[in-house]
Every structure is written in structure tokens, then in C-alpha cells.
Image (cartoon, rainbow, N blue to C red; front, side):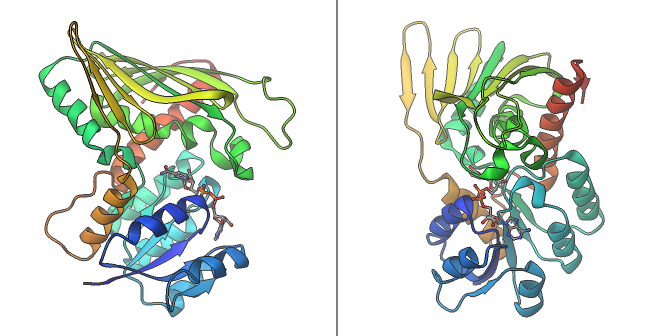
Length: 322
Ligand SMILES: NC(=O)c1ccc[n+]([C@@H]2O[C@H](COP(=O)([O-])OP(=O)(O)OC[C@H]3O[C@@H](n4cnc5c(N)ncnc54)[C@H](O)[C@@H]3O)[C@@H](O)[C@H]2O)c1
């Protein structure tokens, strides 16, 4: 069955989904909404017969949609999800779920009383290498772990204002917090600290330059997570030590290195993670057999709650129990 899809938000990440949905035969993009009319029109022009809107309410009234992709900045969530849940329309939403915890809580509550199919853009879960680490950890005990998200300040103007983006931990390092939950289990408590003042010249910049936090998992495992948006030579990685091995997942696509006393194996990353997550969602909407979605709203909420707890700990200077 063809799946009639409407987009809300047609910025950078929507462009990634436009490309990857081109490789999913059932996907049919019929409408694009963006508050910026020019962007909406340009996006819609990529798909024969697609309509452009500046208000999603007009799109929902005029189009008979099977699914909606929500590619909005963190501060713009809430009303749209609640409207889709009310109308029974499945949605794919990019991470993070919101810039705060309360909005995501309201949406989760609405989903609990009125379930619709959801998927959240934690695409690193779809990598074969994540699966390899999962298998390794089924056989070997994780002793300790560490994770790094280090880069310079991303382009979108909303990113650099903490009240709009939620800050780097909530907006960006969330990918690694989610991967840590996926591979290592649930977290019991967090303790985080942040610093500012390194980035002084950038207009409208109002977020943490760097932070570090310690996660205590329910299993007792400890994992340190470092974030910074103040460096030009960066890294994105999650590294787990077992008694006999060191497994490191690196970069957005997830190259994996497994080192042991006398061996070192490297598995290349995969460049089609957006395609995999989009295929899983569209196939689930079209009623295909099985559900390949690896992150739904309920599960992603646990990651969001974790990153919001890190923010709370950084603000108070105290550990926070989850
Ligand atoms: N999964 C990933 O790897 C990944 C990568 C990049 C971004 N993202 C996430 O995707 C989301 C969007 O990021 P982006 O880089 O595409 O941002 P962006 O700024 O490039 O695009 C956001 C778009 O939303 C539009 N918009 C804002 N408010 C709106 C509203 N109320 N109604 C309609 N349109 C509105 C803006 O005009 C803009 O075109 C963020 O949450 C970000 O974290 C995920």
C-alpha cells in the first residue's frame, strides 16, 4: 500500500528523509509544511503533485494523510503531536522529543489513552555494529563505559539558545545517551556539571560550552559522558570495556572497533541508517508484517527523561535519581 506522507519542517534533517524515503517504494510525499513559505514551496517542488503549506492545520484539513514526519526544532513540539494523536495519524518525529520534559510528558499521556504508531529518529539503533555490540554484551559483562560528543556550534540559530534547543545534552548528545540505554540498559541516577564562558564572541549564544556527567545504570555500571560544542577537532563515540575487550562505536555512522589482547577488528560504519529507520516506519504504517521500529515514542521518552535529568543535575549541582 502506498503511504501518503506530509512533512512539517523542511530544513536540514527533512532533506535527509526526503532522500532516504526515495528508496522506500511505499513512501509517497504529498505535502510539505514549513513556517517559511519559500522553504515549503521548494520542498514540495521535489515531489510531483505535492502541495505546500505554511500552517500544518491547513495541511491536515486538506490532505488525507497516512503519516506525518515531524522535523521541527525542539521548541516547536506539542500542539502538532496532540492533534495527530487526536486524529489517529501515525507520526515519525525527529529527536529530541522537545526542549523540555513537560511537553513530552503531555504527548506521552495522550498516546497512552489514544495510541497511534510512532517512530523517533534515533537512527544509530539501526546499525549492524550496534547489534554486534549488543551481542558482545550478551556474552561479556560491561565493566565501565565512556562516551563523547565533541564538535563546534551547529548552524541553526535556535541551536545556540538553551531555552529553544534544550542544550547540547538534550539536543545532540541525546543520540549517545539513547545508544547507551539501548546497549547497556536503564539508568538509575545521573550527576552532571557544565561550564560556560569559552564561546564569548558568538551572537545570541546562550548555552553550555562543555559538560560532563556520570551515569549510574540499574546494573551498577558507570558511564561518563562528555559533551562540548567548543572544539574544531571533534569526536562522537561510545566505548565499552569488558574484562577481555574494548568495543568502540565511533562517528555518526557507527564504525566499530573491538580490541582484545592480541586482536583488533574494525567493522566499517553504514551510510544508510536514515533509509533503514524510514523503511521500518513506512512499512509499519503500510501494515507490512512485523514491526521493525527500534525507537517508538514511549522508549524515546525514557532517553529524553534521562537527558532532562542531566540538565537538572547540571543546574542544581546535585545528583538526580531517575
Ligand atoms: N537524526 C539526526 O541525526 C538529526 C540530524 C539533524 C537534526 N535532527 C533534528 O531534527 C530537528 C530539526 O533540525 P534541522 O537541522 O532540520 O533544523 P532546521 O532549522 O534546518 O529546520 C527546521 C525547520 O522547521 C521550520 N519550522 C520552525 N518552526 C515551525 C513551525 N511552527 N511550523 C512549521 N515549520 C516550522 C523552520 O522554518 C525550518 O525550516 C531537530 O530536532 C534536530 O535535533 C536530527
